[in-house]
Image 1: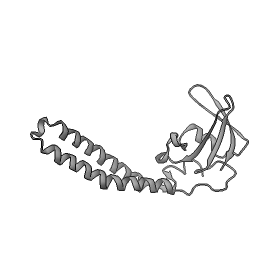
Image 2 (image 1 turned 45 degrees about the vertical axis):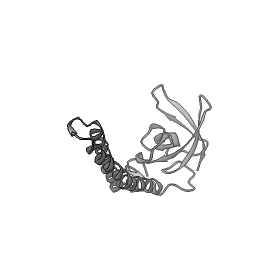
Image 3 (image 1 turned 90 degrees about the vertical axis):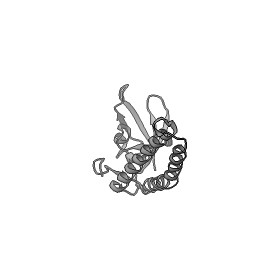
Image 4 (image 1 turned 45 degrees about the horizontal axis):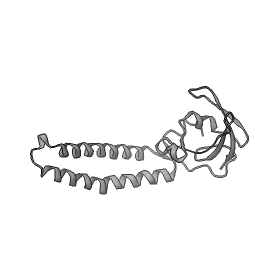
Length: 158
């Protein structure tokens, strides 16, 4: 399966997390903002009521986030992560070493909606992930980077 086949792909865990966020936003967060709006209305004249306008802005942001999550959930293509594969695939966890610096990093290749580099969740749409797809332990891949090409050695695929 290449990256074109994985457009909109998400792991079952990622889908569950999105559904959990949607539930939180539609429940407690909506109620919290509605309470803020009610409270702010009690402060009087709405035309000059900063608290009211801020609460309404928050409500707009919340509703936009809810709509975006619903669309992503509806359009998601759930793909089971690769298990026991000798090569890097969607859902694989891969440890790499930068050939120039010796610095190591571990990534899990996921769909765009799950990507979180701080947690090592690397989107398939990134140059690094695209270069790693299909690579096996011990192989080297070249990644085009803004400061020039980087060579990464695949240390382990899990």
